[in-house]
Image 1 (cartoon, helix red, strand yellow):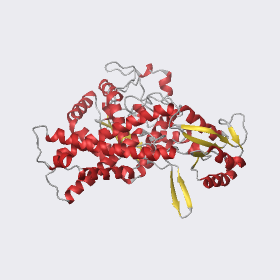
Image 2 (cartoon, rainbow, N blue to C red):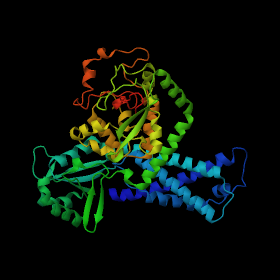
Image 3 (cartoon, one colour):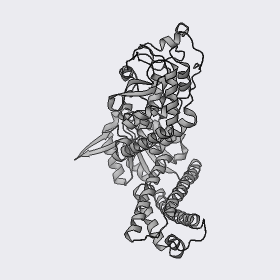
Image 4 (cartoon, rainbow, N blue to C red):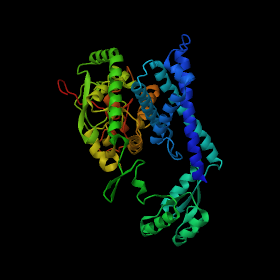
Amino acid sequence: MIKRNQIYFNWINRLLDLALLYLSFLGAVAIWLFQDGHDTGNVAYHYALENPLPALLVFCLFVFVFQYAGLYDSFRASRLLPELGKLLFADLLGCAFALGILFLFRVRDFSRGVAVLFLLLSYLLLSLKRVCLRLVLRTARARGYNQKHVLLVGGGYLAGKYSRCILNNPQYGFHCLGYVGEASEDGPGIRLGGYRDLPDILDRYDPDEIIIALEQDEGSQMPYVISCCEKQGIRACIIPYYNDYLPASATIDAMEDVRLLNIRSIPLDIVFNQAVKRLFDIVFSLAVLVFLSPVYLLLALGVRLSGPGPILFRQVRVGKERKNFTMYKFRSMRVNDSSDTAWSKSRDSRITPFGAFIRKFSLDELPQFFNVLKGDMSVVGPRPELPFFVQQYRDTIPRYMIKHQVKPGITGWAQVNGYRGDTSIAGRIDYDLWYIENWSLFLDIKIILLTVFGGMINGEKNLSFGKRKESGDVEEKDREETRPDSSPSKRTETGLTHEIEQDILTPGKK
């Protein structure tokens, strides 16, 4: 029944999209052509009201593109932002096809303003429809409607983990009928029988889906279980025994009859996504450098007047594919001979009054947009680290080195989620890896907005613009943070990325 309902639902979904596309076209015509008077001579007006059939046929092409983009697939366990990203891409592609059709048939008198306004209105209305649809379905599923009935095969740790997941998230709309497997006191629900009873259980309950969650020592049961599912024509999903090592976006490659499971496949492995991110980085960085050029000049003057030494602070960091690069910042400390194995401290006597000011508002990070233009960094990504600490963390923090699969960023998902200052490096890596596995252009924009509206002011309590402690007043905790063997979770980060800054400059030397 649920499969049949899904077919009907998809057709209703398509018709709603078709209606919203036409409504967007009418709205674009009404707003653009009627703003200064009734411009009924434009061909857009003709296709909107007098002869709408060609426009409806073009909008059917949009729906076909949406289908190709997977916008009518089930989204029970999928996230909203990736769906909206797909929608934007499909809407842009549909508009490109529509403009191509206008060019092919030499329809010249078509208002460009209507076309742009249609794109904006259609994306807004289609996005709003999907948001409302998710809210309605989530509410209905939480109340027991539109359920998908699943059967668990397995009674161990993995089956229990899946059972708890669907119990804690009723909005997904999954109802577990019970499990098939060995008897267990803490089994995931009601035990319906053993593995040999599976054919009769499938006949009796007719589930919508089978979830195979066998433990490693039960692997010999896999061929039999899959054979039973195929004989009944029921779709089966497998939770592998190495589930805890898999990311959310693992992919499978095929070499003849050999299947290769890529556990570190990420969205930025796709060339198109790389090009989109790089283009965004270049455009955004150029815009920042142009519009904030007076600020750059004032900051450079302030650093020069704050004391002798270079304006820019340069330091080697580890970037993409573990390659070293030179990162730029405005100098905020006096020239000193510190090594590359100590962080700056919150009560550091080396910080100048002007340096404390620019660190407070993360203005010392602005030169890193030159790193972005050079291609060493991205606007958004995991923060880069000193080579010394990379060597230390790779052996103490699980999965730490995975973050070097992408370019480091000026700001990141971990930073806007509170992993700044004296916080866990392991927790920070979890957020960095989530960003890497779920990257989208919308996520980058969201992180930038969160950074601008709340992530740039440094919450470090001990920065003072006009008062400094002498080095002898540094607390024992600050001394411990400068030791190479100190705990990775004990570190001081100021502003956006001060977690690993410290000057290594000597007069006349980088």
